[in-house]
Image 1: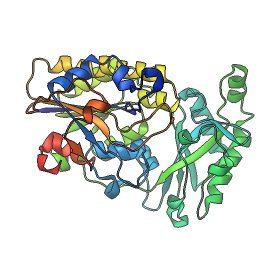
Image 2: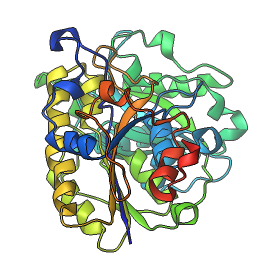
Image 3: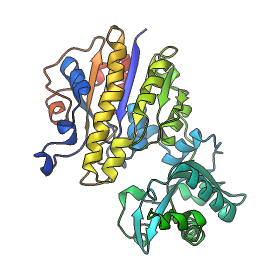
Length: 404
């Protein structure tokens, strides 16, 4: 049975950068393994973000996994809720709850200095104690990423609010980016009240003393209702596993019926355990024929505008993730490896963009092209282009080449 391997370097794609001689990080980073796949397989481009949809990781990864976001997307937070074991009723609304650093009217840091999970858990539980009730519940997640559940929130149309992703508005006005729409005042009050509660908290006083950004406010966004979509095995006829550090991707895995494998050293940041992820993913292929490995670090570097860290993250992804799978497959013929970013996160923008991204495919029945390396520029030379991102998974597994 053919093994299908999907390796996602979140946000790896970028724009040409002047300091790199108008080359992108993918062109400059040392990526011998992704280059090998490009030289011995094929390159193409895929539009993971449908037109008129926000270029978010939930939308993009839904596309990569073979599901049309225009049909199945119901919000980011419900996907994360699935990983935390939070059961949503049909009229509940879940919100993503970031711990942020606010300074006056400025959203200074969307991640509160990438606060440690142990500290964050105490703060979220404290917020739940102070602001939670039988209709509002706060749940701790990982680092700065947490959840709010509003019981019967759909009756108030809270799922229709216009909310802003905090990583898109770092350094900008809080007041101008508060939620907008019917009953937005409910959510705005929670955000404002949280500042009065969190600012004097002992954990934040210590963080300030240590010159770390305090987690002195919550930011609510990414809301949605309970999703409904077919299981992966029903759609593609395969069992599989998902490995990621972030609740969003793991939640998608749970909803699709894939095995979600937790790697202890997976942090969702620069210090994530690349080798641990690769080892766990390869082991999972002993009982599954599909594995989806997601690495968040390049995206975090892009959001931070940190070119050096983005280059490092790409190189570590290439060496420890892609390289490990090439080693695993070196004596095999019945495999297919797909490598791609979910979207671009240009360091110049510090947020996501929605243009097509490069993918590389190598393995069984993949005809070798004439490509020099894995990069945006080389992929643009390919005639292989998927306007609908969800068709790439069909191409990988079902080989519906006529849909390209």
